[in-house]
Image (cartoon, rainbow, N blue to C red; front, side, top):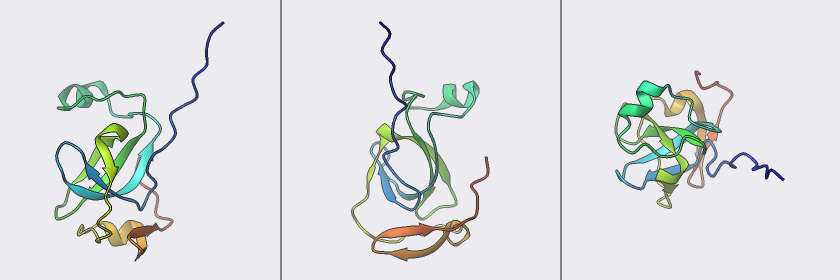
Length: 110
């Protein structure tokens, strides 16, 4: 008999603060994919190359103009509760309440 594995469940939600396990940067999740949607060339150039078959997150990085694409296994919750300084935060979030951003209706491009 063939076992059917359900798709991986998201660990983080849009608006949640996260920290990268390897690089240490803080950020806010703005969007997610159920599996890596990047093409083979991008993935081959990714230094960590985690499993593609897990949730991947678009993260606005604190104190920069950067948006990263990170695998769930490379992220952990950021318990600091501090806001993220990124120019795109007001574009995708309506407010910051209790250490969590409230996502607005602006769609993530992609």
